[in-house]
Structure formats: structure tokens, C-alpha cells
Amino acid sequence: MSTPQLSPISELVEPVSSWTPEREDPNNVFTYIDLSAVDQDAKIISGTRELACSDAPSRARQLIRGGDVLVSTVRPNLNGVARVPPEFDGATASTGFCVLRPKADRLDSQYLYQWVKSPLFVSDMVRKATGASYPAVSDRIVCESKLPLPPLPEQRRIAVILDKADELRAKRRTALTKLDRLTQSIFLDMFGDPVTNPKGWPICTIGDVVDIIVPTRDKPKSFTGDIPWVTLPDLTRLFVTGAKNLLSEREAAQVGNRLIPCGSVLLSCAATVGRVAIVRRSVYANQQFYGLVPRKDLVVPEYIALCLEAMGDLYFKQLGGSFTISFFSRDKTLSIPLPLPPLERQLQLTGLIDAVETLRARQEESLEKFDAAFESLRHRAFRGEL
Image (cartoon, rainbow, N blue to C red; front, side, top):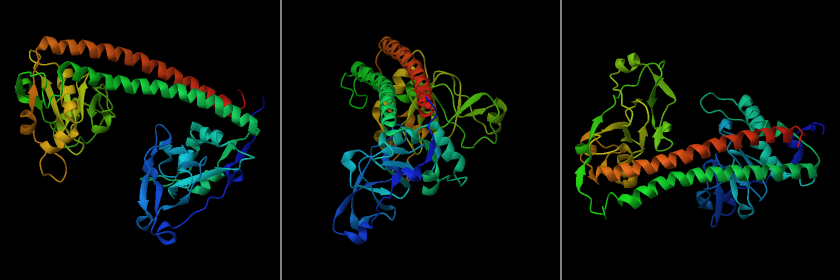
């Protein structure tokens, strides 16, 4: 099969109507889809808002239909795209989106949706974006970009194949999410809610079972080493093995940062409070964290981390008191009440978590293979090789 011809998107889409809600219908309400309503990972609309027309933001202008494809024009590297489902027909989208409405006799909506998710489209937009701190493209740039255009029946066939492959990948990701939830479920089943302590475990304080390391407030001047310097974005799940920035011992010493040993628990204490993770190698951390080093004869890191996680961010916000920016002190951390079950029981938790982590590693490996296969499939599809 020959490679499909490339056609500008502008030749394949229809104009989109706009309106001014606060002027045209001030006494009504409307459904608003702004940039934050699109889940950048799932590529779906996940957070619409119902607004009074009289309170319409200045960007609330574009009238959309089911089947339209939304392409965020800001930070194109994040690929904020979504296809409009039927239930949002007639909603209003932000002017931060380029709204693509395929001509029914030229371009299949689902095919277009698969195209704007492809690395080829994303790299094209990133290359043409302007603005260093807030990169963006215009609607014109989106519409001038070209896509492979096979006959309409072939577009539909390709879209079906890619949709099914995408669905398999989504199921793998859902399985990983469920495994993360399983860990907390196992903890609650074994030990109960740590705030209400329904199982009646003896109560101690965090300070009774850990030593605490308080990272320096000074940011390192350079990052040229091989030891992770953990910041909040590096916390994506229960265990942390690396970080975006890497420090040397010399760079850490220049700002007085102390090494947090392997097996410690990081607890975020500023801004986004109550986030926890266990470090699986020695790390440095920024000032948003306390490093809790378990006393091994009393407590295991998995128990401390899941106990703190189960308390919830609301607990830690209240712990911070009346600060404008959420923060709680070292002393308040050490005084947190902690149910303390026997060490043998905690070690059972460690064994179960190890089993979950083994299963998770297998699922991640499988997902990597699915992702690689999908990218190969998508590449072949848009080259006309399926």
C-alpha cells in the first residue's frame, strides 16, 4: 500500500461558531470546557463546569459539537487533546483550544483524534511553538499542519485498529492504578484507620519511633553528581528511586544538606502537605520534606508511610494551623500520634507489599511492551502500511 498523501488540516475542517455568553444570554447557564478540563494523560474531557452566562470568562467563546477534536494551543509538548463526546454537544470551549470539526465527507473524526495524539503531530507543534516560558502555537499553525489522508473507509479502519490497541493499553494502566489502591487497602484491613484506631493498638508518637532529618532551606547552586535530590514532582507513588536533579556530596555540603538514608520515609511539610514516599536509595531532599528514619527495632518504613498516607492531606493541613501557606513544623511532626502494632505484624505488611510490587513490576514491563507495539502500529498506520 502506498504512503497516503499529506493534506493540510485547514482543508478538511469546518468553521466553528462563537458567542458571547454574558451578552447574548446573561440569565442562563452553560457548560464550560477550559484547558484544565482535559486530562492530558487519558486525552479525554474530565472536568467541565456549569457557569452562569453572566460570569462567563473572557475565553469562553467557542461553541462545540460532539465529534469535534480539541487541541490545546498552549504547551503543545503536553498534548492536551480530546475528542468531544455526544453529551457535550453545545458546550462552550475556551479559546485556548483550536477546535477541529472534520468535514464528514473528507475526514473521520476518530482518525483525526488519533492523529493529533501521535508523536509526529506533537513534535511538529513543539517545533513551531513560540515563547520560552509559555510556549504556544496559534490556531493557524495547527490548521496548517498536514496529516496523511487515505480514503475515508481506510481512515475508519485505521481508527478502529488504533482505538482497540489504545483500549488494551488503558486496561493495563487501570490495573496499575488498582495495584496502588490495593496497597492502601491491605494496610487498612490489617491495621484500621490510624486516626480513629479501631483495633486499639497502643499509641506512641512519630518521635518515639523515628529520627528526623530536616533538609536545608538553601537550594544547591549546581547539580552535577549522581545522588538524587528529591522534590515534590518526583513523588509519583509509594517508592522513590530517583529524581530529576542529581547532587554530588560536595554540592550538598555547600548548602548543608544532609543525606537521607535508604529506607527512610519522606513526608512533605510545605505547600502540598501530607505526601509520603519511601526512598529505596540514599537521597537528598529539598525544604518541602522531612526525612523520617525508622528505628528498625520498633517500626518498618512501609507501616509509617502508609499510616501517614491514610491520615490524609486534610489532617496535615489542620496540623499546619493558620499559616497562609500550608506548613507544619518539625516539632508538630514528631508529636503526631501513631498506633503501634507489634513489629511482627508490620513485617507481614512488608511481605505483602513486596508481593504487590513484584506484580506491579510485571505489569509495568507488560505496559512498556504494549506501548512500544502501539507506537510501531501507529507509525505503520499513518504510513499506509497496515
